[in-house]
Length: 197
Image (tube, rainbow, N blue to C red; front, side, top):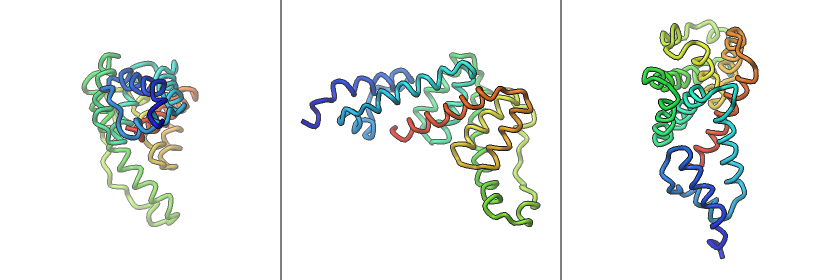
């Protein structure tokens, strides 16, 4: 009886993978949900679809954020699929590479600034970071989108200092709070997807 109800859940999971440009072969965690006829698969499919289609982001920005999340979560297949859809939405190879580089830089910053925040110690607060960030000076994708990706990755990695700093920079660029919200929601939803892949 365990596999008796998979007819309704497995197609939703397979369609989700196809929609993302992935092979419709269910990895073990996704298969386990399909085997249990989990209603969550329909929720996940809708969450991913809704987050990627956020009007405030636009297709290109949403796909570049998605590339960054896939890199952050170390999922190469997802990175390739989102890079392809980013190209289809008008992103250049330089912008896609920059989303990858931004993710790497944020991982360094998130660890470093989280440490400083945890310590509450004047020495660490005043010590020069010594982390080169020249990529932030004039990004190919523009400063606003670079900041948006930085915020999304920092939110996933749980660095309060980085999150508040990037949100403040975005507000300074005139970014609408809805766009900020939608970028972080997209990162959260794609993180939840990566857990199952």
